[in-house]
Length: 495
Picture 1 (cartoon, rainbow, N blue to C red):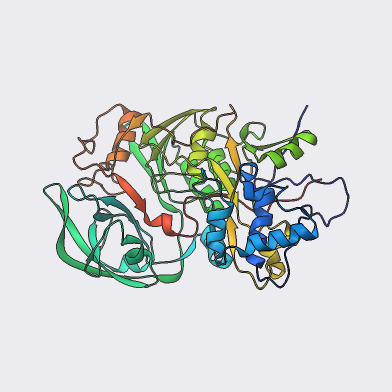
Picture 2 (cartoon, rainbow, N blue to C red):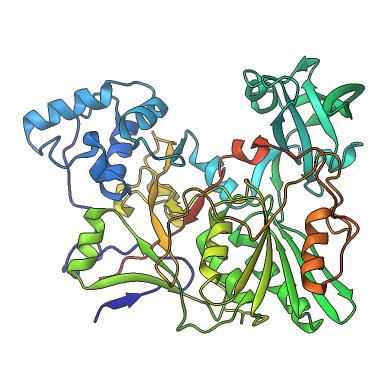
């Protein structure tokens, strides 16, 4: 019988590489480069990827046999690391598997780890970008929502507003990155309106400024809606940020006290985040039976063999308490309605997939992103197996601020399903309509209206034929350090 291991606060990465009782456990030594070669960043990246990367066996440059731990191997290894002076290009071009869509790097681990906590440099405008109907090379932006207490809240701009240019330059698929996500903290949006099925400039300009340290509370909206005999909880949740787990539990305390019998979970603009928060949210919805498996983690062949040799499998169960020990207030529902778009990814998809074996999950909207792998933040801290730990910042190589966020594995649900790289397909297809985006929380907003219709059986005013369906190209969240990442944090060492 296999042993099952779980972590209390975070999904564990289990290190069962030695039977030694020493507390100084580390990844087995590999070849080292010439210390005077100036390749510390590339050396850290290779060593971390060689052990942890999900596709390690598929990347020739990461092969255990490529650089033997000999003098000749050290020379060859040094030459390989020095073959690309830009660490970012080295990571992307020499270490990644061709099918990997999501691993990434950062040249500042402080910025990356703050992003995981919902802290960023931002003007608070969250938007999508899509192609113009009459000119595919030109783009338009549409406002999805605005972060409270941000610079954007002080300007005359709201959800559903459109723009086609920045600083007087029309947005295209060639310039939108530099115009919207470049080094300039202040830019002017050239606003627009719909005309004959196209988005055209309307002469209105709005200047926005990015501010350092903006905190986004992922609980954007939570309401109790009473219709006929139904009490419906509605939660717009924009990111799985574990710093807000207690606040999330408080929302469900309110829902439970209000006697809601239906729940609409809006994950349209949620690209992912903490795996553990996904477990907690799912427990708040379904239940706290700690014997029910929520997920099973699968790792690369190297690490999976170690697990198998130790007769160990990695499973995460529904939770009874938050990381701070607060009892979870579960609704114990048998059905949930989840709203999705192509921007719904990672931990959001984990919630949908993890709940399906236990309850009816009615997915409304678009097919999700299709990101079923998880990652971890890695830094140049060899003493902690390259895994970032906030309590060990002083141990990180002071000459190396780079971090990588490689994919480590995939999560199966209790039925063993994890194959959704093409996304999770909705039960009730629906596209956001440029001509009728609606107001979040309004009963006539098309997505919420559809959910209410399914719950009550009564047709809703907000559901009409989609006039201008949005074919989204990307969104502002894809240009934050977190992007659409699903991560685990602070893995313990278990012998």
